Length: 205
Image 1 (tube, rainbow, N blue to C red):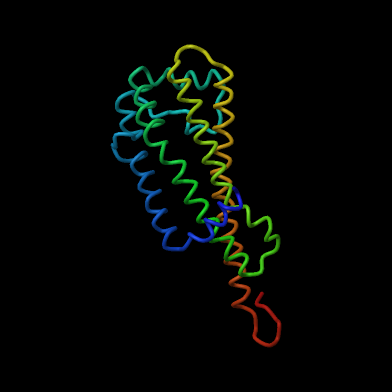
Image 2 (spheres, rainbow, N blue to C red):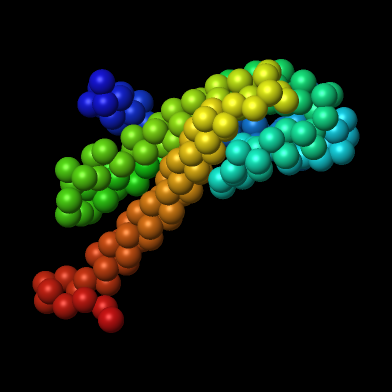
């Protein structure tokens, strides 16, 4: 299955398709963070007086997640459940995973073309954002359970949700870090190739 996913990514990924997915991802982030869209945190803040939601944390304790949900109030929790978890977050993890996978595929392709070492390990890097997306969906399911059963305590589900949130954030942040590092490696290789003096084997300092 993983081999098929990486093969599909490799076959479908071009600079043009990545640009389209990037535009869609940026538009999604703008609607949830800046615009007063039906699923946005701007509207949540207007309704509940806060835009703090567990998804945006790096980690939270059992008490922490119940404090956040309690601060939202009944109206905020309903909005969070139906508009964020049941709306925006149905699409966003797949979109983010697709963007990360395509971006990583292009970087890996250029690293391999430049003669990068450890090509076997590089082959699997595009799967990292998909792992993050999977953790995102599992986190959403756990948080939806907590919201629907609030204020009844479910500490094991809360601990699971906190762990999934941390794994999701590590996956997404790790994707960005690896992309920046990979693009830096590509640029260094291009500079080295451009500085190579033809016929002498010497390189620019």
